[in-house]
Image (cartoon, rainbow, N blue to C red):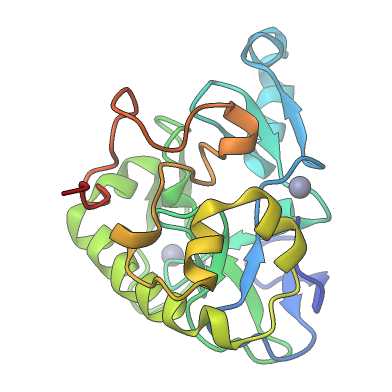
Length: 224
Ligand SMILES: [Zn+2]
Ligand SMILES: [Zn+2]
């Protein structure tokens, strides 16, 4: 699902990209995997001809159960930037981590799609801190994760105070969103294990429990 107020236009770095057509304040939930997104099971993914898999994986991402999800309503067209203005670390939605002005491209960081093991891309984002090659392995880099965490937590602080175009779908699907909406703003408080690569509605796994491998650095505070 993709927030409204975003349009598809020609992009400097790729054929097309997503661009804000009105101001998107920091703290706005911009996109999320949802029940309307297209999905291929692990078995269907394994049966795809390699070229078709590559095309789908370019626009979609693998989930923790090996299924492939193609974000709906054009969200799959969101391009990467090493200075992404939308991040999803520890969340099952992407949140604007700074104010995005009309006309600006809306971007996320592909290194967060860590289930696409071994995936890489030469980056043309042109940001001062461009990593040159983007790899999903970078998603485990502690320094990068710490930068993302700082930005995401600052954005979560604003989440309850800004209009949320995806409020209905996120209230239904996302426990991290419900917690943030209620005022929690640290990842330790909002992270449940449901992420864009492991959305709880899609994987039918408990959002908390001893059998889930905690994401390093995002372990929820244990109950006393
Ligand atoms: Zn969707
Ligand atoms: Zn870059």
